Amino acid sequence: MGGKAENFNRLAEKRVTESIKKIRLVGNLANKNNYEYNEKQVKQIINALENEIRILKNKFKEEEESREIIFKFNEKNEEE
Image 1 (cartoon, rainbow, N blue to C red):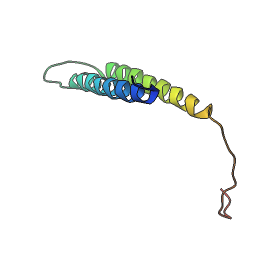
Image 2: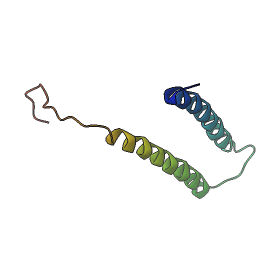
Image 3: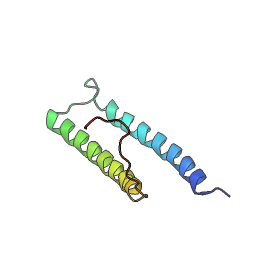
């Protein structure tokens, strides 16, 4: 039986690979020899995909933020 880490690795590899393939298929629509489209349509496609990536990033970020946080001063004497 696989543990949680093994399940994550297996599913992540499969799902990310499939997602990349699907994004490339959307990219194939850019071929003006085969398709006709306008800038408004292109912007809507890109906005939809970028929005989903933003949501994805936030989901992983929330997981990171829920872990214990330890504050430490920077060893350097520089102000940042």
